[in-house]
Amino acid sequence: MDNNVANCWAKIQSAKGSDFFVDTFYRLLFKHYPETRPLFPEDLKVQKTSLLSMIHSVVNGIDFINELNKELTDLGKRHKEAGITKEMYDHFILAIVTAANLSSDYSFTDDEVKAWESAFKKIAEIMLNSY
Ligand code: HEM
Image (cartoon, rainbow, N blue to C red; front, side, top):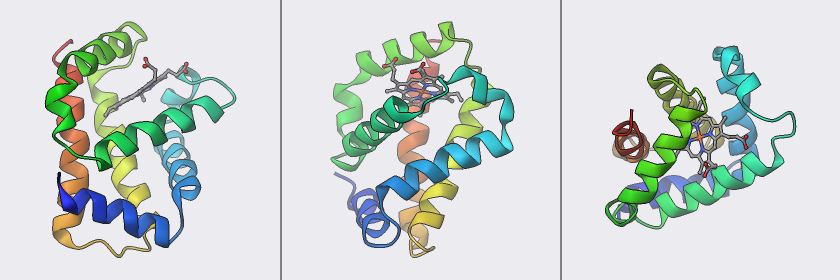
């Protein structure tokens, strides 16, 4: 388990909290990349819950990625079929990193920021193997 990733989540919880984090993530994604908005349903309630549950898996240990290889590959296939382009992943990760920094009141150390970003990059890499 990568303690740095767990530390990031703990810092978000004790600063702005997880609701602020998910709201900020979608706000940033749609602000900087409005083309992605129509891909999502009008009501983001379900999406916010699924983003949070994904983050819980990430926080609970990056090792899970090896166990979830097949699931992440299938998830990538579904994203591809839904018209989500490779380019969109970079924006997605940038929004995840910026939202985390804002939600923690910029209290991450450099190592924590790196760990947070690389956890999502790893996931995206596996998903993109299906492209
Ligand atoms: C690290 C990369 C990503 C992860 C881990 C991830 C995770 C997920 C998960 C768990 C779901 C739930 C549905 C399912 O199981 O098929 C989902 C749905 C979805 N994702 Fe992603 N996603 C990623 C990247 C992206 C990107 C780059 C976009 C495009 C901006 C995107 C847009 C969507 C959309 C539009 C849905 C379906 C929404 C709906 O109709 O309910 N995802 N994603």
